Image (cartoon, rainbow, N blue to C red; front, side, top):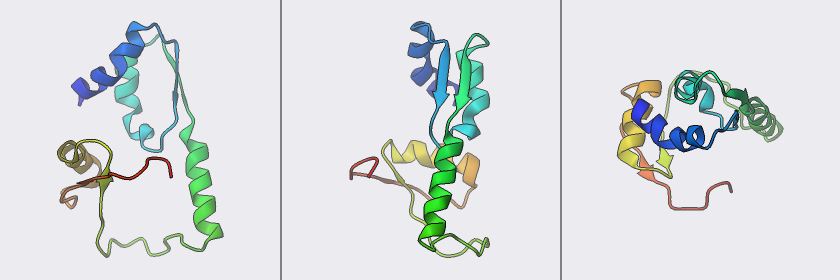
Length: 110
């Protein structure tokens, strides 16, 4: 996983970035790795808290929040990246229950 972090972050380090805003909901899972690769001279701010709050608010407003926290049903995982890589890394966070992922071919951010 360190190699992947370097692949994405080394260009930022090389460019002399001094502040990094973490704006995606999954970045809190990766802050240790991101901080390690970026180094001590970079300030990072987690902006995803607002995203999480907005998502929760929308779920509540539409009455679609999950109230039963037991694992049930079937899940489908879609990724804009490589499905095999998503599965490999995803199992670290979600466990072996993650059987696989499919390539997402729609529009991102819709």
